[in-house]
Length: 236
Image (cartoon, rainbow, N blue to C red; front, side, top):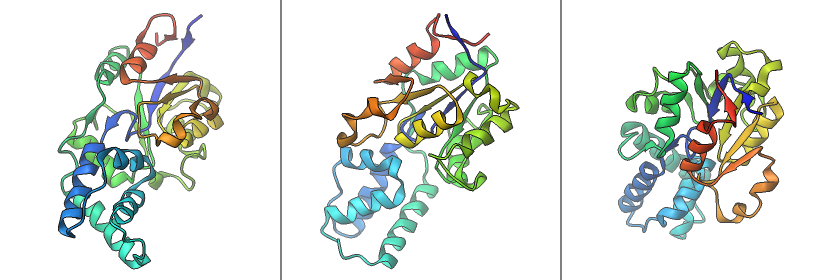
């Protein structure tokens, strides 16, 4: 028997949009400016979901700059954010096969939205450049809540903005690539889907089943098939 779905929510980086290439570009730029070697692309991708500080710290560790002061770390982090804001979408793109998911949901009149730990000023700019801002029914960022994921508060805010009562959270899917996404969705009572193709470090790959997601998809194509195959979810 298929499950009735009123809305689909996504995490942003590493789930709906592949933003890693732009972060790799910025880390390479900053490394070059300091006559350093940039960390391998794969290592940078693994740190994307952990945020700007984690990517900057990776760059410093890779170049034996372990003694950087808190002030220096903050300076590098701010430069990273400034560079990203200035050129936010050179190589970022919606993951393959997920464009079809968004278009199909829209055609069925099913709202989709984003619940992310990305700061609002960056999330809004990225969605605008990618022409997704008018299509996205709801965007919830850390700026909108007092407690970010893995707390369920962002999920409840999304439900409120969509006009869906908390008691109907079981009719809203949440897709994410980090354990905090799954924990937040589960705590809110939403069926959760783990995007295992996202920015997940190798040490976490073996424990994905323990995260407690209702579904695990290894590729964007598998997520497309899960969401759009007949018999699994009913959007009518």
